[in-house]
Length: 289
Image 1 (cartoon, rainbow, N blue to C red):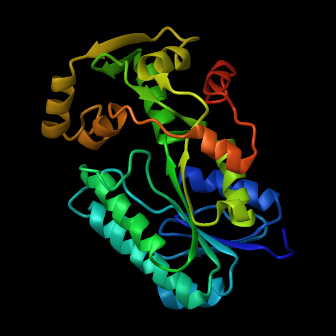
Image 2: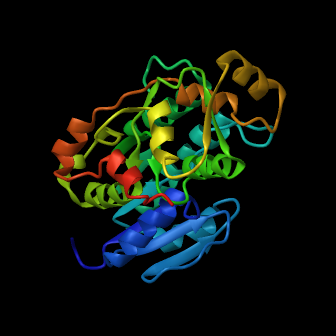
């Protein structure tokens, strides 16, 4: 890696961004980190807080950066924020910013299950964002992540909250699979994707080495607790998601969870030449607590 290697992180205050920024900082990468919300500054880091990602503020500071990590996106719509405005239109803004600033590469986190045959609104918006990046003439790596897990990710906090109540609810049978990947592996692979030519113009599933049923994941997660596991009717779960704003699951949460999406871990491993944490190892070691 060249001296003064500089990376821009868009969406710097989220769980994934915090961990990646910490790892890059420890690896002496110069960071320019940008978020709408305030966040703690690290060493080697220039901090920018801008609610509207104001180009006048950002552009002079990111000129000629080696890469940009685009982590902004939403998985749930609201009146104020819809999939198109955040996942698609904001990506257009970031591409324009990269071109004006002569940023050499963009890395984008899409979603596992995204494809040209997508029919869900979330996946459609992510697919359009991917297309914008692929057609931008910028160098890129697009990652399609499964659940990225660590101590403070939303999925883990959701399960911990249920454990505190003494019961974890499992929609339907729980036999649909997920393919989580540990955040430390994600941080390492993001740095590799900036500096290794093998990642040039690649679309990769960002997934762990094994699929595990949601039922089994929850059992392992709560193994050393006295938590009751309760399977709930899937139709009822969807009904609550539609009619109750404070329901346990949202419609989009359920769509992603029961989608049973599987990714190509072998391709990721071959390109990265990394050894990955087993999700069972992560759960057994209590790294998420």
